[in-house]
Amino acid sequence: MSGVTDLLPYSGLILAMLLSGLLAGLVAGMFGIGGGFVVVPALAAVLSIFTAGTGADDRIMHVAIGTSLATIIVTSIRSVHAHARRGAVDFDILKTWAPYIIGGVVIGILLAKFMDGRTLKLIFGFGVLLMGLHFIFPFLARRGALADSMPTGPLRTGLGSFIGGFCALLGIGGGTPAVLLMTLSGIPIHRAVATAAGFGTLIAIPGAIGAILVGWGEEGLPPFSLGYVNLIGLVAITTMSVITAPIGVALAHNLDAARLKRVFGIYLVLTSTVMLYFAMPKLVPAVSGDEPLQAGKPATLVTASDTMERKTER
Image (cartoon, rainbow, N blue to C red):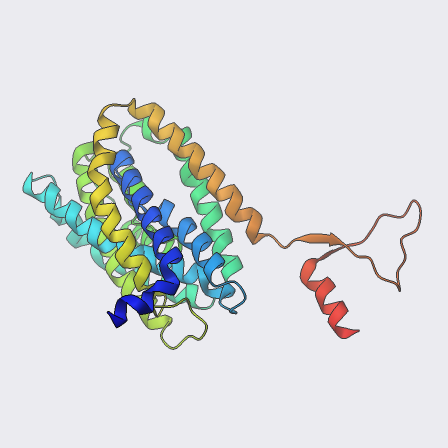
């Protein structure tokens, strides 16, 4: 009973996490992608509210991304298993691309360690904006195959490392870029989707482990955090997404797929816009007793933090 009692002060946080998982599961089922696009902004918003004034603001995005990667472990393994039973997963592609994907993930996690929350918001915002535009205007997907096999040699090294690092910084499973890469390489769409789930596993496992290790010992993190992985978020989101993913699949079969993807693309563009807005430094008019405003002279714009620093100096 004491364990339950300890969680009571965080009941609002748990409820918000459960709702985030519900939405992530629906999105994963409806669009055939991981829930990272939903989980990261949802976690960032929820944790920001529940840790306001604790000094953890600068590491909220790190926790949101790390927790998202941890949730993808369960969903991607479950998806790979389901696709493998139908013989749709190309394990040869996974084996040959694994070293470069994992290497990219390690680089991405280490880079994130030295970035502040604002920088990660900017990266996430621009990355999600690109994905959103891809869903709305799928011009690359319409081109058809550009090759009859997957890239090899230096091109495979570069693309694999980029996908791993890019997805680690965004907290996503890589389903969208992996499917795009494989279809452009002549892989049939159903095989590409099934194999892309394996890419998610290759990204999520080292990504989550890395998030725990690089965040170990950090002070001021949200409650019940193991490094940059929040355990409340992990359990709540994973539980709900497993339950609601089949509902999302059922909805997808009853709706127009092309229109559905455009709607999701609009959601991603809006999400990225909000994230970029909060990442930008806020500009306020500089009003002080030493520098009165003069008629016809525009006010000097400074950041809100600069204004606070001036007040503190006085």
